Length: 429
Ligand SMILES: Cc1cc2nc3c(=O)[nH]c(=O)nc-3n(C[C@H](O)[C@H](O)[C@H](O)COP(=O)(O)OP(=O)(O)OC[C@H]3O[C@@H](n4cnc5c(N)ncnc54)[C@H](O)[C@@H]3O)c2cc1C
Image (cartoon, protein in one colour):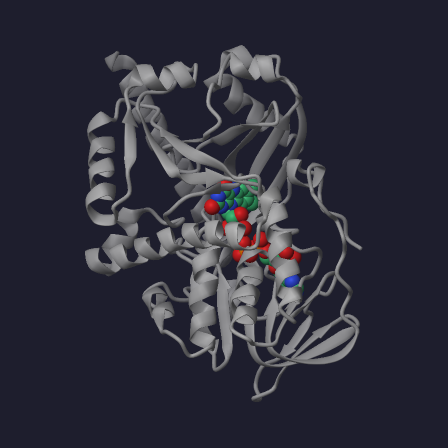
């Protein structure tokens, strides 16, 4: 069986029990390709509705992004609110934001209803600004209250610097209703529940070939075949060429996380909160203190192979923010792939009759995989057509190698803008 890669989550995994490899021929109502949070939540939502479900996972349950991410669960999408509004208008954008809030609630509900105590939920996310930003943060706070009834607290610079001992930080918004957790234990609990509800989960069972033309869809793995009335593709950034139209519609983007040595006293010289912290930059840093260690994520790149020294890349970020952590050793470092469509919104909808896409959640996938999977499940069960809210974000060609270059250039441009804003703030002091 493929092992999980070495991460904090693997090191603290509750159970590593494996699911069988698919062999022989099986019939099912819905076959789901990919056992990340998108596929597992779709399976869970469908199994709860009494559908026969088979999840085929190429490696292990949540082996991809879902089992190795930062663990921050908060409302929103990978695309910025302003970009979404520009494309679909204010009312539609608000409806999408409400879905993203429902996604957070879904994860909370599942943890409570299925009693997933090893999901290790810690409430609170602090979004810090790296430049003087009071006015914009006040506006965001007021909008969240007025439009969505969400209560965020604005922290002044002194309050922020009492919690985070860094000269880089200015104001922050504290969101007590968002949280961070152990995504791998959570995902594995969803897989267990699918099986409890009568569904099947197979690991080391990559779908290599599909025939989706007839009413009975056929999906082949190296040692088995599933025949299903409906198929959901949920392969995230690891989607291969099994369905070429889908592969062309997103770019795999890599991002990195490190875990420090056990050093609670040293870490407390920098970070004095249990909340998760993310800075306001695009593809900025996000981190949290866990079990006396520091788990820190950041950077994105279009290179899908790992740089030689992920730890060194992220260490620079840590020490620039907190020079007092210069001696903190990094013990584990890993990367993961995210799927980004050109519009940065998920690809949710029918690809052809009874064949659904539920992928492309980018770097904001913990709430959005939940709600994305739910709207797909509702559509398959004939309960709602909420998936149509995603219709304006269609399957656009990602630009192939040119798309990769463009994505990297856009990221560098964003980094440049963030840098200039920080410099202006530093000079204004
Ligand atoms: C390092 C990192 C940090 C992140 N931090 C956060 C965060 O803090 N908060 C947040 O909201 N989001 C975060 N994200 C994003 C979030 O993790 C993803 O958006 C989300 O997990 C995507 O889920 P998924 O199910 O679509 O894809 P994945 O979890 O990647 O799952 C896809 C699965 O499909 C399988 N698969 C692919 N092709 C086939 C095939 N042909 N047959 C069978 N199986 C197949 C793969 O093996 C894989 O297991 C982060 C991502 C990364 C990489």
